[in-house]
Length: 67
Image (spheres, rainbow, N blue to C red):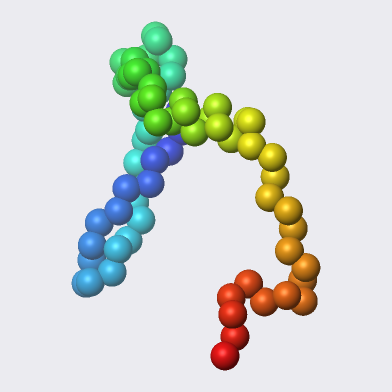
């Protein structure tokens, strides 16, 4: 079983709270059936596999224009 991070606000600050995540064992009483995948997630995976890595910039060249 994995853990999932939830958060709640305490005194104006967001505080993480780890709770048990969904169980992937079909014999477990906490089992959650996987839902359908979102089309955008599938498209992003397909696009990520086909894209070439971006060319590296030179380390001495600033990323943004300087004034």
